[in-house]
Image (cartoon, rainbow, N blue to C red):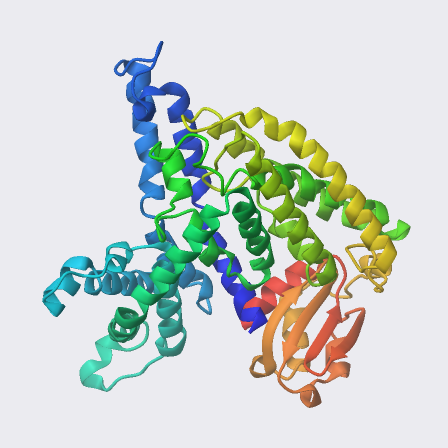
Length: 485
């Protein structure tokens, strides 16, 4: 189940990755045309070439913001499919269109003969997009190889997926007809409760946002506060200038300090506490992850590097993030993002009408960075946590391991044969030097066959786990094996 949610989390990043272009377009648009959303202000009148270009860019970016649910439906379906096939994406879209049409306010009112619950007016949201994507991918994975009688052979294989998805979506619509108003009203209640808590609510939200990342469920929580699921729509109101100055942005502002400064400082702490012989190896990982977090606000490369190696430290990170967000929001600061809390979004959002003292996030972030560094370093040392570079594995020795054969396709084939064939492999991943596999039956694993591929070693750390030590060329072997699987 954990791996399912991890995979879902990675799939959700596919549609989320479409949003940076939205922020860039709208940010530049606001710079060129402040009057486009804020109304005419001194020195900035509507009309003229700059206004026209700015408004054009704002509307272009808004095209994505306004249709994020579609992106989630297609992106999740593709990401959760066995082979990332576009047919799954089409199935996700089919499901989304079916559900949102059948449960629209007009359709529900026509079917019931009375006014529809307000919840159905918000049915075309990111949460439903995610559900549609899961329905589409599930139908694709199960029915992509369907064989029908000759008379219906045209609809065999992948062509059957859309038909099955449509039927499944009708059933899902029936279920959602009953439970969606309940879920919606609960979400609205949670949102209004947190909203009433002010900065404390923002801090609690940030804490749970980080805590849910390993399960990929943080996006469901985000939809309550960032989007229009529970009538808060912090992100949409901030960029659309339909919110309240000093209030709108409170569920985004607190992310900037720990994303731009806190987590990069944590990387520095992990580097300084790494074993001396492993520092060169983890430097590249931590430096690139820190750079990514600072500029774009993409924190998963950092968080996934230690959340499973040191789960207690991850909880400490979630607590620090929540405290940081609560304190930041309590100050007269408001900023927003279209993608995440990185330097690019901070720079672009600073020109939006609802931004309030965004420059204060820099000194606050520097202070947060110092706190993160001290806390991470002390906790890692005190509890001897196995953060990157502190693992018991001899990474340096494995780095020097050399395959006896650079025919990666052949190496992958032999390893797969020694593992008992693709039928015995449940999942495949790799780290810096190793293939990490989950298998069904250890009894059929033939170490002699695997070693004949010229690998450096084999480990069996669990009842269903096998690790094959390849060396630094592990990615090439992993890629070839994924094709075979």
